[in-house]
Image (cartoon, rainbow, N blue to C red; front, side, top):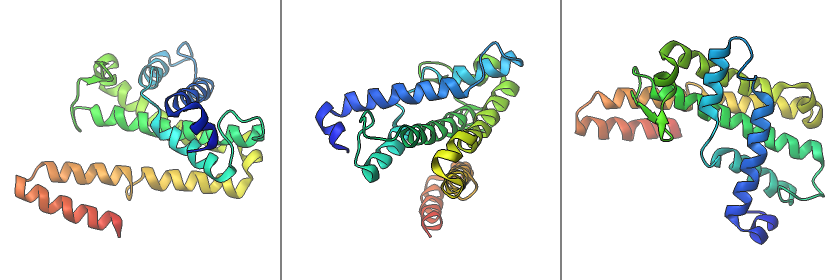
Length: 204
């Protein structure tokens, strides 16, 4: 945790980062009135209001750890701080996409998310599927915008995109979901054996 976080307290720091990430997400996402309205409304429904935004907070905390500055410190160059917030927003977009797809009947089949109907219950399965796809795509678009590439440099920006892609792909989150589906169809003893094997494979 940064010196700034220690001075203000973790809850206040998290609230500050959450606010900045929400502002970044709002600016990145199309308006709910933009065509196709159903898709954009479903995307916003699934992102706002969000949870604690812990994943983007971890991204910002990593930035603070290497920069030695807090989220609100005036000494942080604006472009670099915007980069940390944008990276955190991209991680949150991937997380929100994963929640939409997790809730679908073909996956975990959950009707409620964050105390209200899950996306497919509110907008139908087809729109929910597309909303998840669009959020995932937007995550990578947000890391490839010219102003961010200029601030970070082409090499660093490409590393960010590559790292996020790997974490979300078949050797990361998507692969983990596939393993969960395989394990869920087994007996209790079979689940334990497959889970142990899956952990070993993903760590190797």
